[in-house]
Length: 553
Image (cartoon, rainbow, N blue to C red; front, side, top):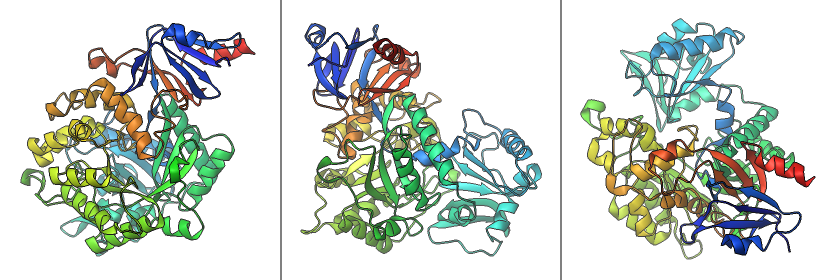
C-alpha cells in the first residue's frame, strides 16, 4: 500500500508524548507511518508525492478552540480599529468618517477592536465626538474585548435609548451628569445590536469561507464559533450548513450555541438540534454541534470581569458585573447539562468562576454526572488554587487565551495590580497539575495570529515586553501541545486529531522554520507555509502542494 504523500527533510513534531520524527507518510487523509526517514520511505510508491521540508518543521495543525469565526469573518468588512493600527482618537474618527463617505446616509457604520487603554486619550470615545465626525449615520464601535461598545446619538435614537432608559439586567449604560456618553457595557449592548440589520445568508457564507481561509493561512485546520446565533439568530445555523454543503467550510468547526436568554439554544432545541459528541463521533465531521455558552461576567480590561476583591481605585474600583444572578445562571447550566450539551461558559474573574463552577457542581447528579462531560470554563483567567482543584476533580477544562497577556497584560497591571496580573492564566500550573488548557485567542477579541500567542506562552511577555509570571512559562513543545492536542481534547476529538501518529487524521502544518529549539523571538517571525486538512492542502503559501498536484496530473 503506497503512500499518497511523504513529508521529510526536516523534523516532524508528533506531539508532546511522541516528540520528533524524521518523516511521515500519508494515505487516504490519515497518517500511514511516522518515524525514521528510511523507514517511512519504504511506504513510497511511483505515484507518491513528496514535500521536502528543507529544514523546516511539520507539526499537527493548530486548533482555534475559542474564537467567533462568523464574527471574525464579518468583521473583515468592518472598520478596523485595532491597536496595531489605531492609537489616537483622531485616527478612530478619521476611519469612521472615511467609511461614512462611501456609505449611504442612514446606514450603519460598524467598527471593531479599539482599545481605550492604548488610545492617546486613555478613555473610550464619546458619543458627541463620533457625532461630530459622522453626523448622518448610526455608528457602533465595539471594544476589542467585545464586552463594551460606544454608540453615537443616531444609533441610540434608533435603539430608543434615552437619558432615562434603565440599565438592563447584567448590563450598564453610562451617563455623565444625566447625559448619555454612548458607552454600553455587557448585556446593555443588545439594545443596539438588536436594531442593526442582520447580514444575509449569502453574506454569512462568504464571511465563513473568508474567515476559514484566513485561519488556514496561519496554520489552523480546526476552529470554533463560540456564540452561534448572536448576530443573526437561527439563520446562522442555516449559513453554516450551506457553507458545509457547498464545500466552503474550510475549518473543522466546533459549534457552541448562544445560551443566554437572548440566544438561540432554546429555539434550536425545539427545532430538533442535538449535540453530536457522543463517543467522539464529531471528531472527523466538518460541522459538529456540541456545546452551549452562557456568560457570567465581562472582561478584566473593560472593568466588567467579576472579582471578589475590587479593581484598583486608580482604575475606577468596583468588582465588575455579573451577567446573571446565581439562581438564573445555575438554572441555565442545569438545563443545558441535562439536555446533554457540553457547557462552555464565559467566566474571567474569580467571583464569576465561582458562580459557574458551583453551578456545574449543583448540576451533577446520578442521572447526569458531570464527570466525563468535559464542561469548559472559557477564559478562566483569574482563579484560586481551590477552584483549580475542584475543576480537576470534576474534569472541567480551562480554555484560556494567553494572547490576552500579550495584548492586555499591561492593562491588567493597571486595573488589578501586578500580583494579580502575574497570577493570571497560569498555563504551567494547569498543565503540570493535570489540566488540559486549550490555548486560543478569542478572535476577533485578539488577533487570530497564533505566533504572539505561542510566544507569550513561552516567555510570559506582553507586547510591551513586560514579563508577567515568569514561573508560568512553557516550553515550545508544551505550548504547541496546548494549541493542538488540548484543543482537540476539549472537543472530544483527541483520538482523531491533535497529534501525528499512525491512524490520526493528516491535519498538518508546515512552518516556515523549526522554532522549537530556537530563541523564543524566532516564533514571532515564523509563518505557516502549508496547511493540510485530511491530507489535502487548504493553504499553500509557495505553491508546493499545487506543483505536486500538477505533476501528478
